[in-house]
Length: 65
Image (cartoon, rainbow, N blue to C red; front, side, top):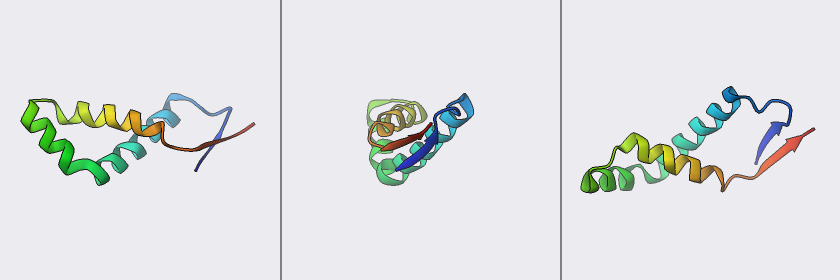
C-alpha cells in the first residue's frame, strides 16, 4: 500500500509515483518489453511510460486527510 497525504498531490509527488512504477515495471517485465519494442519498432521509453501508468492502477492507495 502507498500512503499519501491528500493535501500533497502536486506534480513532484506524481512524478515520484511514476518513477517508482517505472522501476517496478522495468524489473518485472523489462526483457519482454525490450523484445516487443525491438520487434515492433516502438520506442522503449515510451512503452515503459505507458506500462508504468497502467501499473499505477494496480496499487492500493491510502489517503490521509
